[in-house]
Image (cartoon, rainbow, N blue to C red; front, side):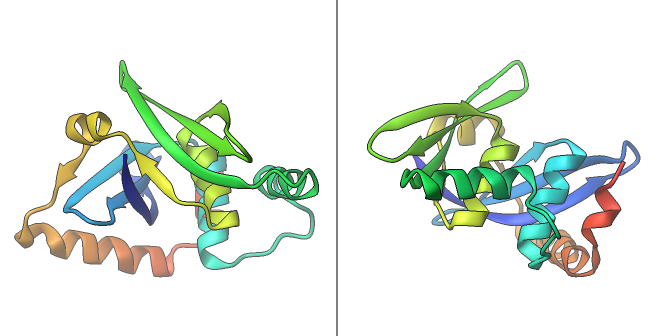
Length: 154
């Protein structure tokens, strides 16, 4: 397993499909995962520190885990089958729960849990961005600083 960090979310044009971009912590690969608008909003809210009047689903799950004293230890992106990513939540003392990567990432950001990815998944779906394309990544980061979570509302 390789640890990843969340670069952020954006809307892919012209399809208006949200994407979360992860980066290998000790490497050069990026992992783009297309996600739904609700999860894109949840990730963007957490990254931007937006607090809602009532808890979102991922906030609720965080609070339930806390109340049960069952901390989220890590998120693992385990497989890629037919262009669908699969992930597991590692909870408490060895409990493993299957979850969508987008939900897993939104929850991991809320509790500060590490996000890891199987080497096989990174080998298959990871991309290396050449130095000349690092400008695009910087533009992506600038976009993230300007985008509002409401931009992902369908």
